[in-house]
Image (cartoon, rainbow, N blue to C red; front, side, top):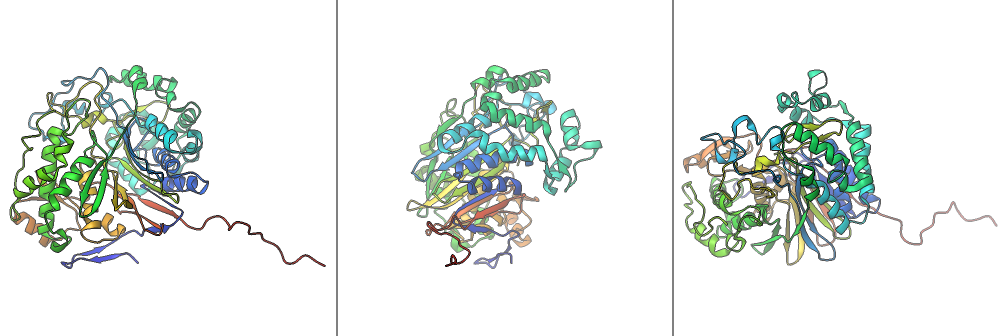
Length: 563
């Protein structure tokens, strides 16, 4: 039966999916076949890193609209031997990029980053230098135990043999059909005969299978310096883009240390700049720690009002202070300080919505996927990866199965700002692969896709777990809110009476189908058992492993030997 929650205020919540529990490992991803690929690796003796990388490669096949070798992302690792790191594989602006390369649309909301002709969103000028593949390979080499070729086997099999299209993939194709139809390769693959692939139809990607085989043989050099990279650079240039062979060859991942925040006796770890999550989740938790959210109850207008104000504060500061630390001074210490949080908290009116600007002392200086994996030894991986928008730039590299990212859309098209385009600058991101501990004991690992709504959604999941005492399944499926200071978006699960109460406080309430994407995660018990969960917003699927090998020395016989 679905899990039900009735909070302190009588708020009803029915979960649509079931968690999975095991002691030998858990794989949670946004597609059942990708989770199966990771579980296959765990069952064969691989560790959590091996399984996570296998899952990501499989996702490039079964979630081609979300993730690919031409994209980028962030991988958060906590190893059984105590190593804790974040592998930054975010894309960068090409060497030929410049701050004024786009023409912003006058009056366009800053968060939409609108430009004339959608040049930073669709087509070759939207393509940034990919970094996913070298980051995955580097993560595997440092922390995994299998070879790149071995972890890629499930993905190659899925690409060459095909898989059944899900309703979710079919709907995504339909949403982007007009743009996909303009690219011959994408149209042939996803719009055969001019019609989108329907749920249940089989999608075979032979050209992509050959690309994966080339990568399995030659490693990331196939794309970053090899023949495959030449095809990529030539095709992008022919379409008017500026990513070169030299850009691909220079692409490197960066290993960073996570940001650590404290909240009600818990430690919350997230990725550092240029990712926003670590800094601003810590900042918002510091602000909210001064309010008794548990007493207010989940789903109340009073509680969500405070969360909304914290979101607006974080986004105001993020706009001027969180970007690539190689280009912008990021005042991490101040942003995550209890003093700044206390000052911000003192300005919150519990009865009225406000407009927030950036802290003066800072100055200048859904279309993703997520995987959470844990193994029996205590290794944990939470990684978020993307080609940015649905189907990225909506152009493909002919004959390869590769779909280009549109990561340049993450930069602010207006010059002179912290988030403006600069050559070699890493894109900033809202990715939020989070780990939550208490007293050194790992409690939760989670993350999700969803663009600007990612880290606010991850924050709410943490609040659900810590303040509202929800199970993991409940915490991930619970209704969300989101705002940057404009409309306050509410999911359908927020009752009308609560929406009216928020509007009465001055919030410009707006109903939306979903906020952010499909979140998944794993919770850990002190006895070594673990529970994986995924929410209703995507094809999230969890595989949990139990059982194990036979007891040492056990032999099976068919009875006593004859005398």
